[in-house]
Length: 357
Image 1 (cartoon, one colour):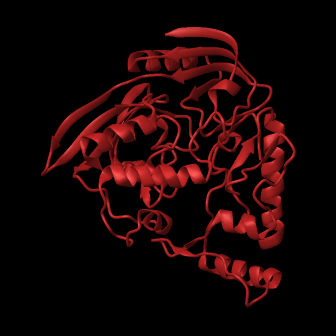
Image 2 (cartoon, rainbow, N blue to C red):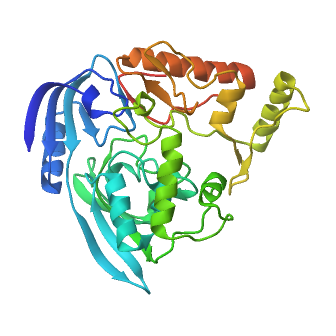
Image 3 (tube, rainbow, N blue to C red):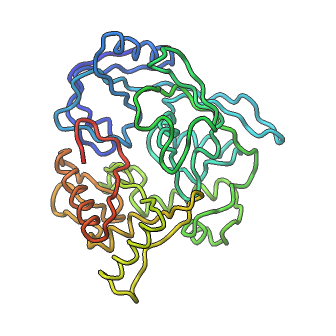
């Protein structure tokens, strides 16, 4: 366990913004993680858990409490056979893309479409990380946590995690600290069936085709790089939290209202918003489409220090020296513009600390 004081948090987040932590404690074992959290709770002081910083926007004023930075490690196969698949326990502090790379190399299928996503493994169940037709909820077997209220270790089976689109039991609450995640994967040479049109096009195959695991991973990384979604120190488009807004999920009535407003604005013979049926009867549509058609082009905000990505309108980027306030100003203008144009309020995906959108 390592303790520091007045450490800028900007260097620990992919958005590269945020003031100092009054106290920063870095933990490298699960026992240290639990001990550090218990110490702060016993003192009744503010606590912020810092994972990979890829989904976090911290206020310019910083955090006036203790930040516990998770740096635990360990990838432990608990079983691996053709019949039962591979069951693998991964420490919360393991880098997610390193985990995906390991799984692909071992011939364990199920998360290859989640290649290139920054952050740590412990954060993946919190917002049910997903991309290109896969969500971690499809392969998570268990999530082991520290329950701060009960002061005890508590393990959740998949069905108990309340996974939905970019959400889970663990999101929106500070009660649970993820200690490790157990994945159940298919032992296979081929990836799961390709479930995303752009990915299938990039691979030159039909939707539903199974391709070699390594090919699937390479194709996903290529798609993400083209959109500025793979961290690159030389590319300011990647100084972001990835997608800043989640795709709206609307009732059928709300979606019909959206189609009407789009028709009024763009013409009834013009484009219509994408619709994807949800299991509960609601309709998911595309936040990027709404942003584009509300008049916010790639690079909106330039030449300012914060802008939409020049590669993808769903990402708000720090061009190198932006403040948190400047980043959120761009996000607010986009959110408000979409709401004014189409009556849909976009919801931020990253967690805001000390700020509100």
